[in-house]
Length: 102
Image (cartoon, rainbow, N blue to C red; front, side):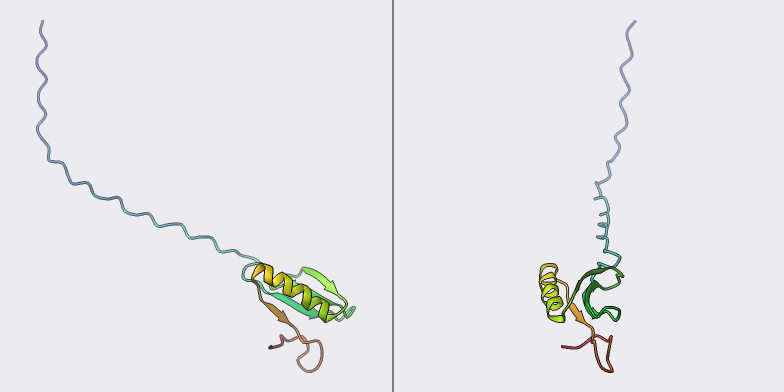
């Protein structure tokens, strides 16, 4: 027995291809925590009169020094390598503990 010929499908007009909507690029995550945009702080400790270096927002002291000059030298090198700024706190007078302007 012979098979009947397949029926022809009716012609359907194709829709023009529309470009897929562009997906929004995911935002780069901003760093959070004490190292995000942090500056180096130099301050004198009252307990032992040593100069300490720490980052903004951090309680951890990076390093301590006997003199302000040693602390500044070290911090300048660190700031140059990391691109951060340095904030020095006054150690004497009415502005003790406040950040000095240079």
